[in-house]
Image 1 (cartoon, rainbow, N blue to C red):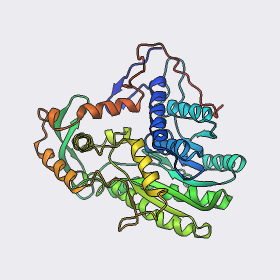
Image 2: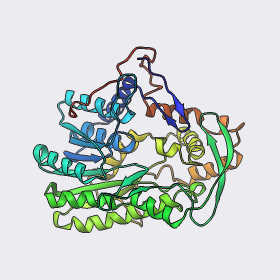
Image 3: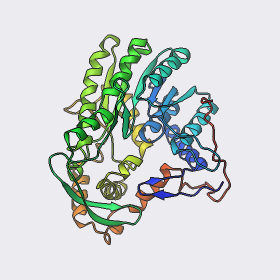
Length: 396
C-alpha cells in the first residue's frame, strides 16, 4: 500500500515502515560516526521502541557494541493497516543489529505486568546471564497495577489553581490561550502510580532477586524539569509530582543495589518533540521557540545526539558522574543555559500567530513530529508501494 500521514489531533494514525527504518539508520550512522564508547556490554532497555529509549538502545549497541534486549508495547501491522512506529523502529533496529553481528532480542507486551518481567528475566538468564545496564524509559498514560489489578490513568493538570497561558496548534500555527483546570488528589495519586518510580523499583527488585544484575550494574531513568513558563502545568503539576517520585526512587534503588556495588541514576533530559510532549499544552510553543534559539547557537540536539552525549560525556566518560544538588544527571544543561532561557522568555511575550513564523521554528517542530512516524525523511520514496506487514526477527 501507499502510506501517507493521517492526522487526528495530536496523533498520527499511520506510520511508514521504510521511513521508520531510515530514521533508525540515521541514528545508527550518527553514533558510529562518533566512534566507540567504552561502556556497558549487556543492556536491557525498558521502553525501547521510540524516543530516548530507542536512542539509548542504538547508542548501547552501535556505540558500546552491547548485546541488547528491548521491552516495549507496540502494535504490529495487518493487511491494509500500518503498525505503530515503534514496531517498525524495532524491526529495523534488530535487522541492523543482526547485520552488524550484534545480539538483539525484543519482547512485546505490558512492561508493567509481572508476566513480561518474568519473560524478560528468563531471556536474560538464557542468553546473557546478567546485564550491566538497565534503562527505564517507559512513557504510558495508563498502568494496570500488577498487585491490585486497578487501572490507573495519569492526568496532565496543574495543582492548586487553574493554569492559563499561550499554546500553539503546531498543525496550523495558531497561537491561542489555553486554560487547564486544577487536579484533584485522585488525579495526582493516579499520575504518580503511572509515571512515578514504583514500577522501576519493581523491575530492579525482581531482577536482583533473580540474580540477573551484574556486579556494579547501573540503572538509569529519564526525567524532565523545563523552564519557568511551563512550570505550573509540568514540573509543579501532576507530572512533576510523578517525576519527583521517580527521582526519589533512584536513591531507594541505589540502597537496594549496595550488595552489588550498583547505582541508580535519573538523567534530566532536553525538551524534544515526542508523541507525549505534543499533547501537552504550552510545550509545543516552548519547543518551537527553543529550537530556533538552540539551532542558531549550534547547540540543538535530537534524541540520538542527546543520548550519545549522555553516554560519552556522563555515564562512560572515565570520570565520576557529575550530579546536581538533587543527585540528578543534567544533560539538559544546554537547554537550561541562562542566555537560552532569557531569550525564550523574551520571545514568549512576543509570540503570536503572525509572529511565530519568524520567532520560532514551527517548521522544525512539524518535521520532527512527522519523523516520529517515519515521514519526511530524505531518500525515502513515499509514493512507492510498501508492505505494511513487517516482522520483528526475534518475535515470532
